[in-house]
Image (cartoon, rainbow, N blue to C red; front, side, top):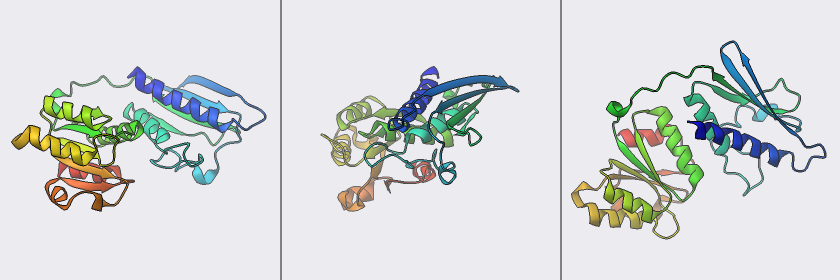
Length: 237
């Protein structure tokens, strides 16, 4: 989608702006070229490059070089997933003397197949952190393109979706402002009764915050940070 590509380049440019903020020389360049069936797009800034020990890790989930509170470590990993979904790559261009991120895309991205017949499960992801919702959604789609994924960013919106849709699974953060994940589960129990979707709880804290009875009824609990494949294992279990 054009909006996804825009998200990639807005993120890369915002990162560049943050990186050069304290430098005396400040500039950002965007370069594009078509080479051997590929479109090469570079976002270059006046920084001195990414240290070699960070180059492989910098596009992985939860890795960040920013100061505490300034970055979640999800932005570049989401960008990488979007580009890989289009058949391309995103990496640090180590050959450039300045800081440079190189996006390579095929000139022809294969035609989209109608995936309606491949939908296996309808999944709702609920978290008040939008970056996490995007990350979890993109990772699940990358690992299993047959999933139909819906997003919600608070408990009230999630409950409306649960009541209005026939869902298979709800992946919910435990700690959220207003209606938290536990209250969401209890209210969904009352409204959906025997049609209650299975719940997977995500928490950055100890699992002990989830009542024992609910832990025994839900599909599983994952503690942040986690490996995306472990979330898919719970979804498909």
